[in-house]
Amino acid sequence: MFKKIAVLPGDGIGPEIMTAAKGVLQAIEYRYGHRFEWTEGLIGSIAIDKTGSALPPQTVELCKSSDAVLLGAIGDPKYDNNPDAPIRPEQGLLELRKTLGLYANIRPIRIFDKLKHLSPLKVDRLNNVDFVIYRELTGGIYFGEKCSDSGFSSDLCIYHNYEIDRMSYLAFEEARRRKGKLCLVDKANVLESSRLWRRRVGLLALKYPDVELSYLFIDNAAMQMILNPGQFDVVLTSNMFGDILSDEASVLNGSLGLLPSASKGEEYKLYEPVHGSYPQAAGKDIANPLAMILSVEMMLRDWGLVEEADSIIQSVDSCITQNQLTEDLNTISPISCSELGHLVAEKILAFKKEVI
Image 1 (spheres, one colour):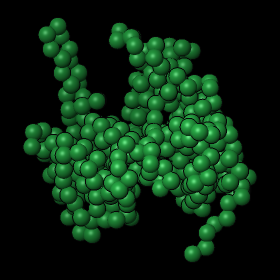
Image 2 (cartoon, rainbow, N blue to C red; image 1 turned 30 degrees about the vertical axis):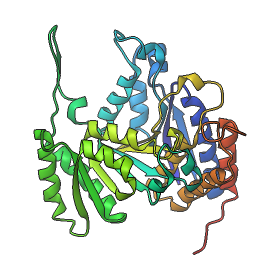
Image 3 (cartoon, rainbow, N blue to C red; image 1 turned 180 degrees about the vertical axis):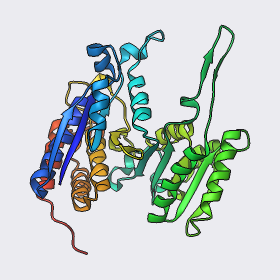
Image 4 (spheres, one colour; image 1 turned 120 degrees about the vertical axis):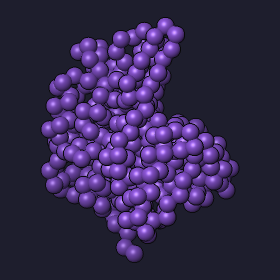
């Protein structure tokens, strides 16, 4: 298989974790006979510094001409700490999502048994935790009309039927492939936009009699995700609520460095770790590259390369089992970001598919 990949390392630890991910892809190439052509582009703070734009036109064209996009991380303190900055790194990511039509953000939440002790939750609450959050990504309050005057500010939350329908379809299909449970999270007791979500999702549910549909208000859902996270299978929600819930869920396994994500549209797909740019660790070779590597696994699985994706999962599991981990997960005898990337790649080269 031949694929073209747009590589956007971004800011902070982005370049380091991306190097590890590219090493894994090279191992996949060698092990399975594929060929991946990757071309780097600028986005975020580094793009502002070099071009004056958080998302240069060349980057957009690169992404559109590629089969997939890999993104490292975006963000820099010099913009975070300046409320008057005219351009911010995050604007580049929001613009890229909108330009590529990446309306669905998918975040799998998986607990690794060997790392349960690192979670802030009691270990018994983490049993059977394996769910995925489907977050609508290009509508709602983040993209609605904004108004600000000396005495007030407002952000308009708008959703159209088609935005809800296309997102809900993906979530129902995923629920059908998994345990057959879908939970819509909203605030339908207060918000008109949430009531529209309930109406549209309820109509689509009629076509999925094999999927059990339930509803939770966002405040209760946030509580339930701590009290009993094992109850969830597929969680469907709007942009802002999905942002909140996915960040909350990311702490269940004890480290942001383990969580990948995919953002998809009708034509384009982007894969990135959930964590930020972690500028304090930039250039120190201590960042955890596993979330970036697991994002590559999601990309390969979407291409139908199941055994290749399984080889990544098994190799990551092996590193975790053997405590071959960076300092966020192994404070006693940590290894570096680059060492961990090399280990995963080596294990892929030695991978043998399990016969059941």
